[in-house]
Image 1 (cartoon, rainbow, N blue to C red):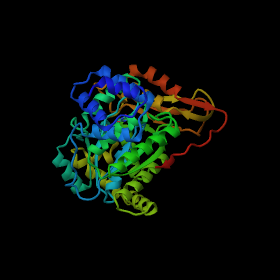
Image 2: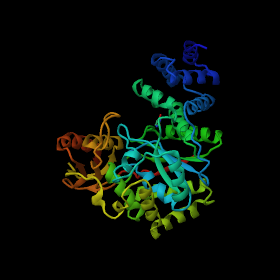
Image 3: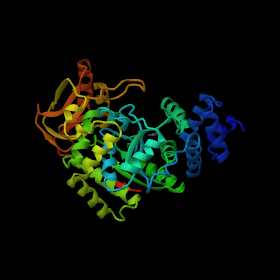
Image 4: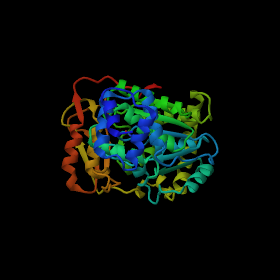
Length: 433
Ligand code: URA
């Protein structure tokens, strides 16, 4: 088999077979096929697209490029949750202990942030002492004992994705449904969960900015999961403005804790209850949405979810006192107000721009190697639909390096559109696949 023939076949719009897809994934993983040939194939895939069958073959080949984790020693049905990425998305930090407090095992492997999107691992590391490094045995024991553990994805899981993703990133071939679906699903399938809940984001802060594309991506991933005998549900949720009010590592963990105290933002609380209910259904802890939601609400109001969070933090080496004393989090030496330049309704807050502003203030990485400032970030004081007077506070910026203020502030201000008329309310949940 020759890579040249595979590129030519795809370039001419034909479907690749399983052997051809295996050949290129294996060959590229082993360093036997050069970047320039894989780049050409990726562009051919991007332009000609892949059929559902080709996407399944690609996912399978990628999954088998590395270790496939066995979670069979963990009791019960393990449900994983995956978000396609966004701004202010601290969902796992509240949702994992919340769902675990209702007796569904949560064995989750999470990632770090890159670009304008934050990562769960970085956020958890804002908790003093918290470790995301864990041997398989400890991970299994923690889930069996406490029903929850979150660790970092090891390098041995889907190494093909690491190479392919880096190449896609520099060849303008990221935003293709088959390539995104196979990248995400190969990692989920290799992580060993029995069932998968996908939170597919849509809007200005998401990979898929268009609603129709978001549904198509969700459908592709759900079909792959179900085809591989993992019960999979996709929920399409809004990422047109940041989720909740907090963006940045310490700030987002604090907002997640507030949510488990029953004092969280309305949109974020609603998202957690919604996703949580489907996780309980997938874990067969509940057989209907209403009962599952009630269980979660009761767990918050009784303090059970908060206790589970403390247990989870303690088990991973963190200081559980942070839950009652937010001064223990890495903080910011400067808190600066962003004032509204005019009077009117906030009609748009571009999530991606807010994410980039937080990154500039120190909360994210410019490159994979950058250090992040855990105390830096943004608290939005107003959201879309709110009315503001000129000079009123739109947001507070948190930072330690004051030299970053001007450019972070300009970027944040540019994220807002303020108009005379009240905008139409956007939905939080667009649908389920
Ligand atoms: N997240 C991934 O893991 N892969 C993609 O291709 C896009 C988002």
